[in-house]
Length: 549
Ligand SMILES: O=P(O)(O)OC[C@H]1O[C@H](O)[C@H](O)[C@@H](O)[C@@H]1O
Image (cartoon, rainbow, N blue to C red; front, side, top):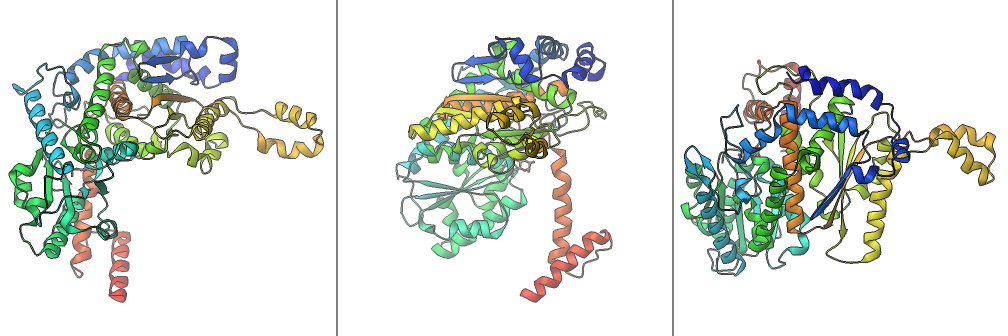
């Protein structure tokens, strides 16, 4: 049990006084604080000095990392050991971006050979489509790609596509549909010409209801518009680990791209699941994304734990959540391109570590991961930052920005960066009643009148944050940023003693949805097994359907 470890106990003791520390004071007592608690990598700057930490806390966190064997467990992941113990699988998204040529064995097989072959197949396909050599069934060039997938088979590629828009080829537009809400697919398809559309059906299992429903509707749309029962051959490709199911759907064997069971959905954008990214940005940019992630992999594997960016982020998350009891974390990108990054991180971290039993199946009696949420910082400032500054709960935040922009309109970028830096400063420093009084006096205000308003203007401050700056947002730095968080999540799982790579919590809802769906589509079916709330909701749906039909 983690709670029995010496370092864990020490951290528990240290947390009590730390809850009452003043970040402002810590800075004024130590001119070197920012240098002490920051890290500069070739393509990234991480400032974690605005956390409620000191050398002793960090030392104990490093001791914990050692006590739990983080370094050995990291090597085990990279080398293909079955660390996803509840599903008996290796976890090898890192192998997908390993260009070293060294073998990685899974069940006696070198997966690098398969990865290289699949990358070559992707590259060939991407070039055919982008060069206009791949033609639809009426011999027209492909102009629009529609990616159908959900969860890990959608969020990663979609987030990257959005982040790297300036690198996109305007000749080929890529659209993403994940929701089974028919409006989403219909709205996407409405302006498109079926003769020039290519669907990429991305599903590891090729059974996910939302994706398969959208795929069947898309196929009907194609077949009826093109009067061609074989439209699937030129207009649909699949990415899956279940080739038989994709063939059954009608996709030609040569148009199926493989993903493997040792790639988790939420870590899969580096595999053929990234095909829409490569189609939109070109294969060379996809490769740059892989190289950026590979650089972070090397850093994670080789840097000592006290200078290891993913480890630092994991330790700080543990400190804030498990020891200081802050139960949420905001992800606040200031770069508009990263507007889906918070949603992406939500799946990555919460699906991985949102658990309450340890790797041995025993109940956990400490806080695991925080609730992850957020949106672009600038929009957030005009929405929920009030809560961050003055709400009852402290929400540690990750501020993420890039120094220069692909489209350089300098003063825009300066305003953006100024806001990013100022917000973390304001959250840390706050403002107390006395300084409000001083400001009021020097402005010649009536102090008696001011007294009433002062409590409303006090900001407690002391709200922790990390700041991550990239020199610019490009395929390379984005690859590194995503890998940074992937490894943070892995390290967090090790520290918390969690199996980070299963997601049993998602399955229950899926099963229930199937049962409710049957009751919705076949009225009159015995609904006796449902509770009265469920029966009432189903009855309301039936009533209003019959009124609107
Ligand atoms: O790729 P698929 O098999 O369609 O699965 C898509 C998604 O399904 C579920 O929601 C899982 O929780 C996700 O991790 C997965 O990415």
